[in-house]
Amino acid sequence: MWKKRIQFIAWCTLGAGILVLLVMAMRKKDEAQCTDIKIEIEGAQDHVFVDEKDVLDVLKRNGAAVKAPLAGIPLRRLETILEKDAWIKEANLFFDNNHVLQVKIEEREPLARVFTKQGNSFYIDSSGKRLPLSDKLSARVPVFTSFPSERVHLSGPDSAVLQDVRHIADFIARDSFWVEQVSQIDITSQHTYEMTPVLGNQVIMLGDASDLEGKFGRLLSFYKQVWTKTGFEKYEKIDVQYSGQVVAVKKGTAKQVIDSARAMEVLTNGMAQVNSMLGDTSGVRKLAAQATLAKAVKDTAHTAAAAPPKPPAVRPKPGAATAAGNKHPAAAAKPPAGTAVHGGAPKPRAVMPARKNKR
Image 1 (cartoon, one colour):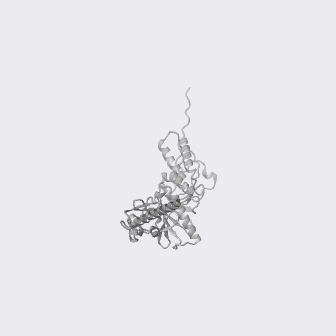
Image 2: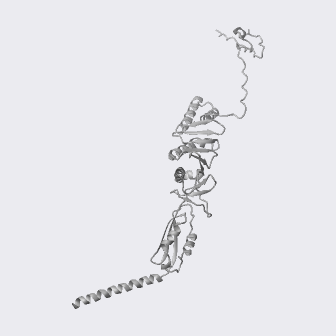
Image 3: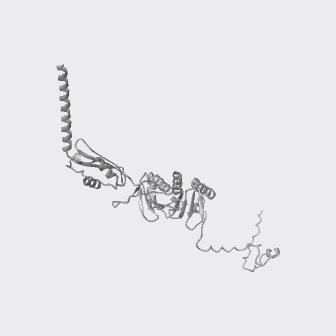
């Protein structure tokens, strides 16, 4: 009987002691102060639209500061306030064992800049979320113009256009060559896309946002096979929306179709044929023929700015008609040797009789 009472008293004493320790620990924690604030911003690789100073200002305005009581710092509320910034994708706040407030920020990274038909602009990230412009910096991303709507909540067709923009911009961002080469992309009224490159003053017609790998692959082949030889300023339009070919239009000329798989092969084979025909008799003629052939392969149409040159005068051969009015074959008969021919025809050459061999 006494033994059970002693055990009961012992358990009650132990429980009371634990409760006192918990209360003291909680009171000590409530009295503890924030020793420091550490902010870490991740997510953006090339552009930083959220800086530590802005985050720290938000924290201080809402009760989070060094030496502030831990109990008075509303962590969940601070996370919600920070995430109201469109550039902050996610915010996580917690205290470590040293009472340091750890602030983890994941920033959104701009993927493209979009200009509406009314002239306003905004960024979008990889999820298609609209992001406002910043006074801190301007992101170096592809520019899309003539977006059809100003609304934040888009209709079905406009939402599809924005997804196309995101898809094209994401494809460009994955290749450093296209990041450097693409200047802007215009959205047409038919919801197709026309690209303007950094090098060259032409329009590249992409069509819709499908098969981007094939379209940009054909464009790259065109660059390698044609532009490396003719330069970047000779074409006004390049259409890559058709499978297996590039349709190019030179400035001031008619349309020409260049098979991206055959262009270089035709040029190389043609040069080989010219070399075979000319042999080794004239290096100068070889070079001239190769240049002429290369131009013929690339330039399927040529528009001359000046009038065509006057054809050279052809001197009539002996035996040809000497007057425009001759209608009878007899009038074109060969004159006797030594007779002067009127009408400007040359005298026939004297033909020496063959010399007989002496025996």
